[in-house]
Structures are given as C-alpha cells and as structure tokens.
Image (tube, rainbow, N blue to C red; front, side):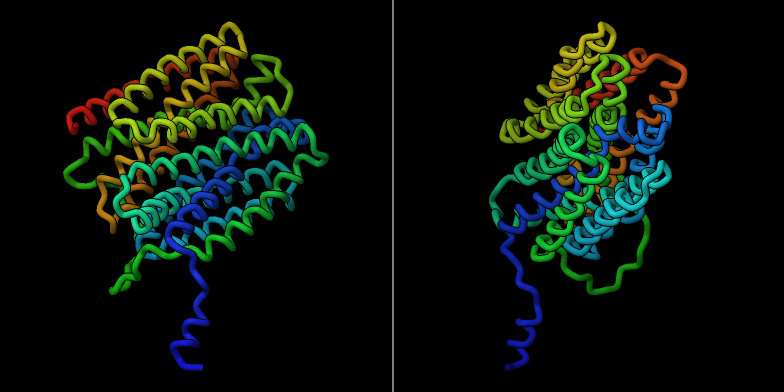
Length: 409
C-alpha cells in the first residue's frame, strides 16, 4: 500500500457539505433540547428536595452563568480552532452534564449539572450557527444566507421547545422521571457526537499560531448602530423565553393551579415552538415585513400574557405566549442574521458569540430579578411587571430594526 493510500485510509470519511449541514442542524437541536428538559421537572425536584421556589432561579442562574462565561471565553475560538472540533467538545460537555444529573442527586448536584450544561450551550450556539452558514454556502453557493440563518434559528429555538415537551411526557407517564430523561438524552448526545465527527470542517488552520484571548466585546467597525439594534433584539427576545424556561411551571401551579407536568412542558413547548415555526414560515418574506409582524406579535401577545396572569385565565395566558413567541422568534432570527452579515468570515464566530452573549444575558438577568421579586411579591404581579418591561424592549428593538431594514431597502 502506497503512502497516499495509507493517508487516505487513515483519514475518517467525511460526508458532503449538504449532508453535513443537516447533521449539524440535528445535533444542534438535540443539545438545545437537552438544555430545557429539566424545565417541567423542577416541581419534582422541588418536591423531592423540599427547596423553595426561589431556588429554581438559582439553579437556572447556574445554567445562565455557564452559558455567559462559556460564550465570553470559548464561544469565539472556533474561528481558528475549527467548527467541527468545538462542536464535538460542546456535545461531549453536555454528555458530562447528563452524567452529573444521573450521579449527583441533590440541590448542589443540580446546580453543578446546570452550570456544566450552560458551558456546553455557550460553546455550541455561535459555533453551530457559523458552521451551518458555511456548510450551506459551500453546498448551495447561490442561495440566500437567510435560509441557513432560519434553519439555525429553528434548530436553536426548536430544540429549546422540544426539551420541555419531552421532559413533561417523561414526568407524566414514565417511572423514575428524574432519571429516564437524562439517560435517554445521554444516549442521544453520544450518537450526535459520532455523527458530527463525520462532518466536513469549514475553517482552514491558521498559517501563524493564534494566541488565545477572551471574546472581544466590540461591534463590527462601520456598523455599530445596526449591531446594537440586533443585540437589543436578541436580549429582548431571550428575556421572554427565559420566563417560560425557568418560572413557567411554578407560575402555572401558583397562579393557575395547573399541577400537570405535561401541561407545564407543553406550555413551554408551545411558546418556543411558535418561535421556531415563525422563523421558518416567514423566512422568504422581506425582512422589513418580518420585523413588522414580529413587533405587532410581541405587543399583542405580551399584553395577552399580562391580562391572563391578572384575570387569571390560563387560556389567555397561553395564547398570548404563543403569539409573543412567534414574534420573538422572528426578532431573534433577524438579530442573528444581521450580526452574521455585518462580520467578516474570519470574525463571524466572534460576532455571533457576542450576540449570543447579549441574548443569554437577556435570558438570565431579568429572570434572576423576577426570582428575587417572588420572595416579596405575588406571582401575578411579578409576571405583569416582567411582561411589561419585555413588551417595551421587544417593541423598541423591533421598531429600530424595522427602520434600519427600510433604509437599506
């Protein structure tokens, strides 16, 4: 056997860029889904361990801290370390978090497991989004970049939607609901890692060694105002999603007397699912029309959420969440697409990591404030104040991005 043949045999077989695009999208969806599986399980952990409602916000905060720290220190390095390598690392870190959930059964274990899970998501989000964009560009060079951005956004939010539904189904119908979901996703994550290992790399190794530095917190030069609007949109979008990811199960019990775990999972699924579906359905409509729909949906939907919490009327609350979810899904996708378009290819991962860093601050900070408020204020009042602030933020972000889209048209 010649040297060339040996070299070919030693290299692992890679799938095409087109096939790799869908493998990465599927892996992205699985990891994101696992990050929200615990949402409908929190009342079970609360019952098992006897901790107060505010402890749920501490556990959620550990996840958010993991995401933000990981985005700052690791989210951008796939620009030179390689997309596939960093994706594999992200998936394997999620595997570690699943093992922790299974092996460390205590509140401290929950906090550590969620912290590790957050680290995985911080590495994954910007890396997978950039990888999808590059794989699609190589497989279909003439296609609009908005298609890859829509699939990335749908995998991201679709995974966040799927996790609570799966967790709710396990909680309601499967014995050992605090064990089985983590065991099932442990297997799924290992399979995802094996599949991603076959995907082509889209980043060339640097000719000169790159010295590590943390994430550069700066907008692309010459387009700062547009980048700021995109960041504001991402922050506002994730603020609403954070409400349904962390506190929704407790709100359903305390405000609406809904104790069914499947209802808790289905509620979060409906909001995130609307966000993912909205991204796909509106993908080929002009950006300014998308943003107009998003802005109106956020305003109407969030108003309904507040009315439903005060009435209290669960159907109004849920319908409002679905309408607002559609709006923030489109708003978030537009923010990501805008950030990616403003950055050069060599710094795309860095720009996306910065946008996701802003988004996950939106996921964490308002929810932490709401968790503190729950110690002193009734849940319905906390929800109304929270939703009002998010309504102002989403409508302002949507209006600013719509104005920019009109000026570019």
